[in-house]
Length: 290
Ligand code: PEP
Ligand code: MN
Image (cartoon, rainbow, N blue to C red; front, side):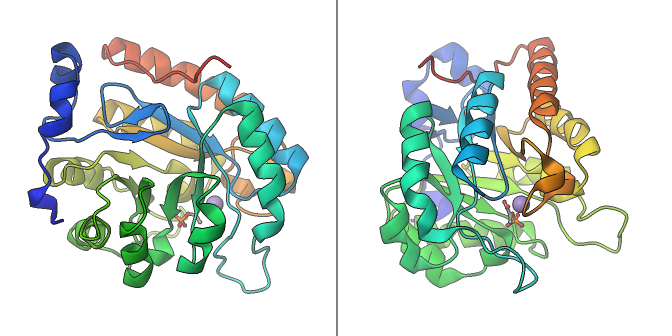
């Protein structure tokens, strides 16, 4: 299905008039479990960059849920620039990850790096994440078009907004239009930050596509101390949500420690987001009561 064939109106009719009036005119909400992304509520997805152990993942999951995260992120397969860096626990993590999802009632957002992982991941995944490095992996996107799970499509760090939207069509053409876009920073001449946060892209992607658009401030700026400010800016600018990296002990993280929020910093951030959204009369989605 092409983007312009997807009716932006259809799902909105199911929303209350009040709710529909508060969301961006053409955004079609995508449901992940019980979480409706792209509706009136702002969705917070949080968790570690990599799932490192049962203890680390469970501690993070329980904490981020109590702080207001509605979905849990965690990498099982990692695409690292260095071939010798930690590559993720892979299938060895499946057993305890499933137990933690059952225990917390949370849905998992995890990166898929190879179409052959669909069979293993499908039973546990709530939403597939396509990483920046795979935005152009059309074979992977086509396979995800055949699944019925939502897909979080990150923008390639050198991709034009148009290329990103066209990549989404590789998924929707296969029949899966449950797509959420994620701006995660682009490569520019600037080296003081890991990437350059492109808030422009959020506005344009929301205007030009029916898909909800969220941001990933962690990978954009690459420094934990600045993640809250970017998160608040995105919430005010009208992003549909945020995906943020959180680790109980960032200094010991096997990947992306410098940009990972502590459990306490994450709690502080969600409180601030809720206050800022309140001033805009916009709700923050709340985790389910277990
Ligand atoms: C990640 O989410 O940990 C990740 C590797 O992100 P990106 O693909 O945006 O670099
Ligand atoms: Mn990461």
